[in-house]
Image: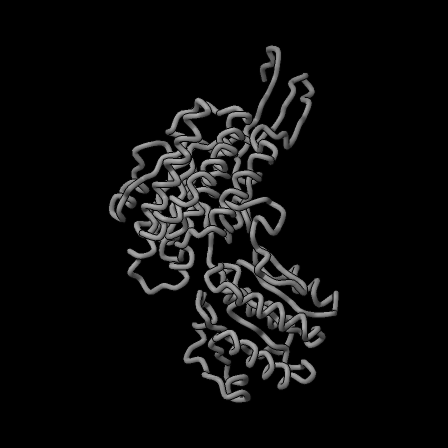
Length: 397
């Protein structure tokens, strides 16, 4: 096990990383172009996540710079207690040890997720996808340079060039200590990791997020929240389903306006039985579609009788990620937010804010749809476990 690096060293490595990313910007973009050209798949959201352009490099630089400015998440006192016998008891945050990040197509994860795990005192094992191999190796080279220049061992950040079979073998029987696994990617990757892992896994789950337009909704807000929720189709916080209250005044006009605006953005609009008949949309063949995360230019609109029915529908079908109610009625919003079982609940705002940076965490390692160990965006301060420190002078029980 690596001895915990001082916070000064960890911050210095992160700041050096920011400098190197700037210095090697052109080289990173050039190497990434090769990965993009070699990508033979037809998954548009995968292609979008694979790209490392100037804007992505800016984001990488911003993330490590910001991480360096944040408080040390390790050693934070969470509880203290003085025992009757005089022992002083503390509970403090502690690093996990070694964190394995398994991910697809996103070179920015090699900076941002690794940065968060590194700042919280962990050794990082990176297992990226073959489609981004050259971009990832280039970035890992910079990590090693930043570590070396600050007198730290390069084995704090290790890249695992494993194929699927080797990855499965490593998950089932790791050849080195692994304390936590974070899969970042599609449902297949997550299911594969969960199935084979022998240590705790933080699930960065699927989206399939809903907007409920309540009968007392502000209709301009409703349109804006839905369109914004569809503005980045590769995001796990995108909107896939819209439920319209059947008692919404001028419902037909509102839905017609919404459909026409979605179509302007080249989004395919599907409807449930009622909406598809009323508006001449393609209907749905099976209710199973309500479970689907689209990650595509596609949205499904349905009609619903009440807030209670909406809550039940979301709790049955959604991915447990984000859900939105648009209403002027505070009590209805409160009932919705307290009873919908998703990691983030919104009243009159876009689901696109479910993101560590946007919710004040600075950055995120993943967005968890599990309820343990942390729910929703996992920031620097959540990527820790804890430890009991007990000071005595000979006490026995």
